[in-house]
Image (tube, rainbow, N blue to C red):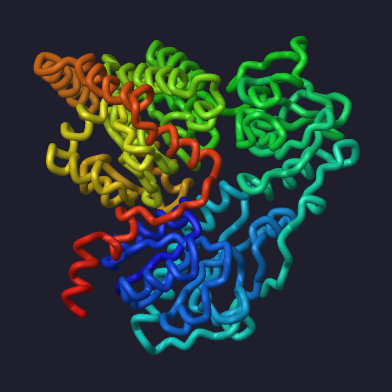
Length: 571
């Protein structure tokens, strides 16, 4: 089928839908919902069989949904209506929730149901549920809905008649008053539920020293007590605030009245409010903010690094490098780089760069810190390294993963192996060495030039990864451990280590890693310090959520010159 994705933004769900539809053999193009007229142009240019809306913030115009079937992906059970579906599910403590594929009609979220899928809820942030359970349920339900649409013998029914075991109802957008934290009265579980229901958009509005804040990235803080609302400690990026019966770590905040009104690590955004005498608890240590941890199981070391939204700033890269070097000193044979459940890595921390006194200088520090980590992984002599991607990766994070000896992906992972959309950024992390080595020079050019997301199966086919498996995180972890143990129980590990050592010596003689790094950084220096401000403009637009003024032609295939020429010839 010819499928047009109409989206407010090309977010994680939209990208997963894009890759799943392409893998299923459909012809897919994307249009940002910039205006009704732009959407009408896309309909006329692409002539889709169906429009799919994974992520919209407003209604599709009537003339469009009357001209072409429009399927809306709604993150709620049949009958649920309104813009805060997942927020209410979290606040109400729902144990099961779902995703519904419904047809656009005059009344929002009230069209006939083509398919739905349910899932068990976890104690997690809204953004985590959205990227995992909601995304997987949405893909399953959408593929079923499209097969029914293609089949032609299925009639969608109203929510009341679709056969669902339970029905939702209309709920208005959740207000900040309904999320407001009462620090003296709310226990830790309640505070976590309120902040998680708003993470990552819009955050929970709060006050601290007469300053308005929006709270994000909340975790239980073990072993801390104090007067409710007080700041008790600092742990890396996070601050601990006391609740009625304990405390929570707040990892990130948005401070609209401050000099940088976008999300930043709480300890950085609130530096002027924090007392010097506050206890400093190392992040990743027992009781600290949970971003880096190491677990050893026999001869296998598992290094976890769960950075918010996958962004790795200079300081985070330095701490991770030290943790990696410590893992290399352990008497193990395998090191498995786990990343986080939602993101493995998305490369540089653009928010911290934007907030720096000199963004060019901080960009330079950040890219060198990531390169130091990539080089350490690439040159690990006595361990076999595995990058195990439970979650998505983008830009430098993809090539940081490829620096490992083996890359294993969860089957639902999406990769964005390119940099150019960030103001024609050249990129580093030794991609000019790693990508041609694994995919071949021709494929490397195509991958970097296409600027498109890639599903797990396509990544394995392109040799960006060696394997993908696991329908969900639990299956992935179980299979991962089985495969890692299998490497230890056969002679394969010894063979792989010998081949790795020989390949590294041969490649180093041909062209040393230092040469790749120097050449890449020369290009990056031009991006950061040169006369072309494209990178700085693109970074600002990304961090400050400036609305898109057009859809990139890499996504809007119907707007590429070849497509426009074909249409002119046909007319």
